[in-house]
Amino acid sequence: MKKTILLSAMFLGTLAFAQQTPVLGGDKDAHGCIGSAGYTYSQIKKDCVRTFEQKIKLKEVATKGDYIAAVIFSKDKKNAEVFVKDGESRSIILTRVGKAKVWKKDGYVLSPYKKNGFQLKKDNVVIYQ
Image (cartoon, rainbow, N blue to C red; front, side, top):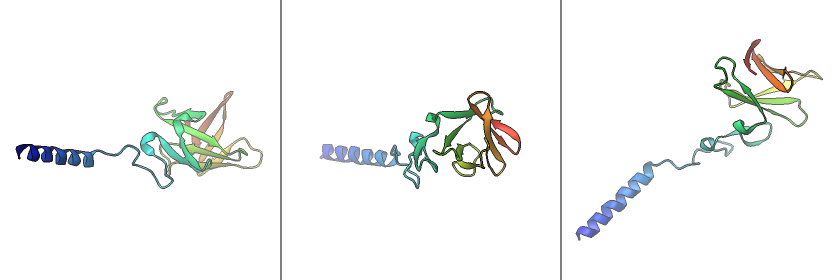
């Protein structure tokens, strides 16, 4: 009888512990992207991406690179999706007008910088490069 009570108590304790442990990958957003695995939704790619795995990464100027912004271009290069830490949403879609080599929206301007890099300005102040 004591063994049955002891085993029952252990079983119930295990169940209670399992209920409190968060499930890894259980934090999917509306698009099915798992934030705990580093995924966020890209409006341009229409898929979940890891911003830290993108080819174009810019370092924040104010913190000397503590924060990284990622840039994803549309296939035709008319739009640039920029993932920044202070964006109201997860990303900002900038648009290139005509044949200009800059992408703009709401005070943000993405332009070529140095040989193969890019620079992002907000209200004419460089925030990432």
